[in-house]
Image 1 (tube, rainbow, N blue to C red):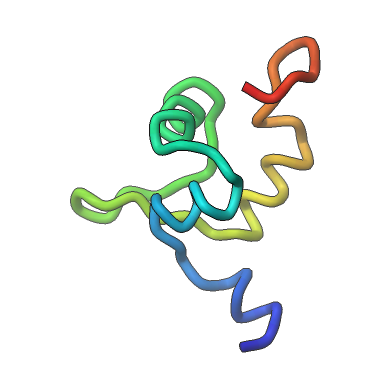
Image 2 (image 1 turned 60 degrees about the vertical axis):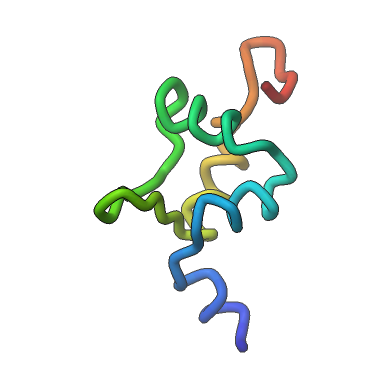
Length: 69
């Protein structure tokens, strides 16, 4: 699979946890409090890796002191 296909596909909540190396409750908190890019499809959360990468690069996952939460 090419890199573009990987970045274009939707990934699950578990996959985004594995991708970022964090627990489920951390991702849920980021969605609620830090506007992490996500979409809810029925009861399931879905994420685009390209959007997650950009969000992380723009310091979406860090607090005011620059420490990841």
